[in-house]
Image 1 (spheres, each protein chain N blue to C red):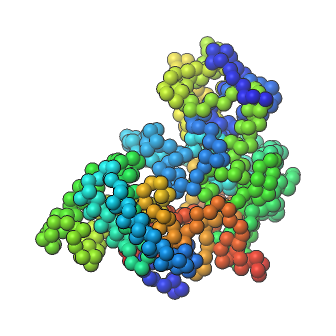
Image 2 (cartoon, chains in turn cyan, red; image 1 turned 90 degrees about the vertical axis):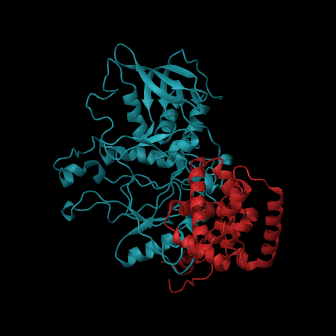
Length: 393
Length: 193
């Protein structure tokens, strides 16, 4: 069925803001359930053939994440008392395209562990913080993890390292890379449990999409064969095929309007050329990532909601946590060839949870990858890191 | 590090792509002659978009010390100056003025040290000594950044002519790879864990 087309003045059931990991799934679930849906996406609907092996553009010029060099400047400050200043590049670096950052992410697809949901109860609260359990448990979420694994296509190996799962991975693990072998061998020698990294990248053909061809332009790039299981190649095509979903690209949302009873009923947005539009809807779903969603809630403040929408708690825009990381680099005598295949193929979760008596809460995974993606420009930029000159003969 | 020989362009050879598999090693004479021909044709036929020919000559001379030409092609043969000219007029317009100021400061150093009017007229040894003295400046950092970017970006941006940069480090422009990808996973396939 052809993609739907709705007039802006007539109310649709849902407007979804954003077409990424969350918005793509909402679009597909709501449209297959028979609701009329309009999806508003800032960026273009890039197809696999649009993605290029262009290190300069993707890694140095924000091809996908936009920012000032693409005419979408961002401001940045470290502390509340500072004035936010315009900066080069894109400090908030999410991909502006249908599929959002599920298009350019590494594909790493670990599930949360049960402890993530009840850590405050298990480990104890922390004075001076609002550290709390989630209102749901891993067991309640598990069927949905499995549903996602099987509907988008995830490669991995079930085992004792994995949180409990009701069904195996749909695809076997990706072939190990040299960096993965080094982590696995070293980790095992030290008594840890390295295991094949679960990734939302196809190790074999699945649901009409081909297996990964290991081209190497993966993390930070878009997949040229649709083997990376982004919502752009999984959920969105299914949503559009229902005939109930209209995808409007190049549309940047400005605010959400509410009616007298306080319910959201309209989304105001700009088309690419700056024309202002507004779409009426019975309900609005904000799927604009952890930073843009609260920003939109604030931008939608009105006389009725002076502190922004959905903010009776005062918690909108608080407690945002990013994917923090630290790294250690080494030089090895033989070829690693990080420029081939996916970002990472082995991971260790032995430090996923750490007893607070060691001085901090939480923990994380350890994976092995080329810091520079193994690509020529980034690798050369780091030349001289280990020893010797950084330029010249 | 013991196994890595610090040889010419050691800073590029440490980057993880093995020099011993480098195309340059396999077919060096052919690449050198085609690069030389290409760079001559390029200099004759190409006009600069942003840079004047004199300042372009100076920037090119600096790039040529960052990735020199020796037994293999360098920034000159790769046409890095055309990349620099291109990006100063497109995605890096904000650094054009600072780069011109940086060049003027360098030329003043040239005048003071050697009584010569231009960096490009100095010997390679004199050039390197001056560049070492400004190694920590933003100007040199940006020159190094743009030289490397021009050496290894797609040729459509002006540099990496005939894939001179990629050939230099043995980077093959391919879309399909199959395991084993590197030494350690080949070893793992052969010997197991």
